[in-house]
Image (cartoon, rainbow over all chains, first blue to last red; front, side, top):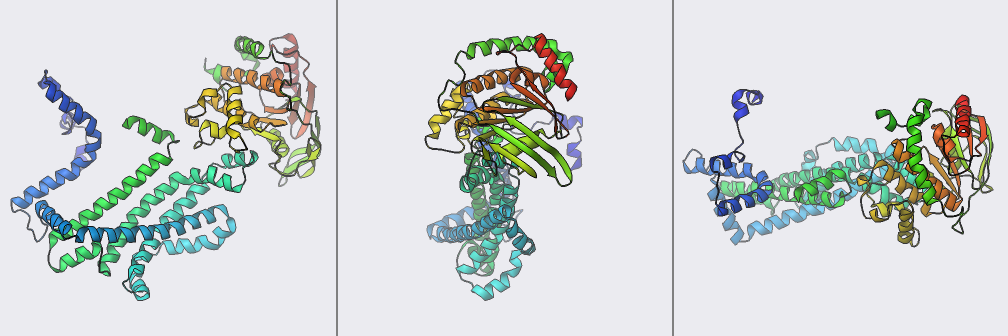
Length: 300
Length: 278
């Protein structure tokens, strides 16, 4: 690893694969078709670039499987996973399981996120609440919430409540912490200004404090989304009769490694989707922020 | 060149030649803009501010010691002094941001206890809310018909066409203009200026002086300007007081005709007198 960072002569002359800086020198007169293709590539490039690595991994993986270097018992080929995808899509089990999992995830997020947000606001704005609650919350926060799965099963059985409860606990803390921190770090000067200029508590909160805390709250949300899926996988794997976690667990019983991998990929894509939605939310709500404004300019 | 733009450059007499040239440019602006008679806009008025034996201490440390001060309605008062001399504390007491330890502060004949709606404060940093557009910042309190009044106020400070933008695109001077517009929206009877021009470069500062003076002459509110720039105080104020260690060390009327040329001999003499007291 370390050698690649030494600026030796070889490293300096290395050009990344996508880098087309010296291509025109080799072919000084590209045809109009090629030029159009290149222009299209230039426009799509920034959008496609993040997907290069996953695609490369898939190509390598398929090659290894086709050459028999990789046993399908260990890791099924991407083509097998695609077939499993088609099969589960046709019998409807994939969609219904994804919907079930998503529903659980979102309900858990709404409950846990709501509680975390409310506690964050209360404790950041009102000292007595902080004194009364913060130590307790810090203690609970440091308990790995998956450790209480046995208890949760005893309390709720393997019904929906168990999964939703676990997700809610998992997401509450990152949102609590970041809401608290966000509100506490809103510029005191702005709050003082708003008071001098006659803002009463509600407008002060919605016009000054909450938007000021929003960047931090959204960071909390992104953390929470990661934890949300993680918790749900574990919960569904351990105790469930539906959902992606159940689908993969069930497939393991029948040695359907392709379905297992499909489930993993579904989680990855759902996680990515959630993250992209949060980013879009950031772009929208933080348009006033020079960093986001310049990003948007650059993307145009 | 660098020194010209350094804040407080004007506080050092050695740079006066530079100041003069810059001042002449500003003088033209002032003359062009002050054709309206004073208090041209009806319904606007200043309020008298009175301090009676005001003491303010933070813990054991007294910041203001028995301050008596009478500011008639419509006066432009400058408070000069070193850092830690109690200037900002005085301002926070008048705004009602902090209670006096002893004595009374009154605005328009009413004792101050808590925030006073007819007093507006311009801070050293403009304190625009970054996530509100400029027009929304000006109308931050959202009174009835706020958009119209905010637009008028923005027009008054020369930023009529910037209302839809985010504050971060503005320069320091423009931000202070927006802050001034925000203060004007509520028709204040007293305007407190807490070194709002301190962080601006020399030329922008002179522009802001002209703007502030024009608006003050049109509306006739009372102004208390906190500054450690003696030149600024002499250029703008009817009266300068020097606060030193929580006491008034000098109370000096400035009877120079407006618009002012600070290069005049009279201004120079006043300048010397104030500096000696600081």
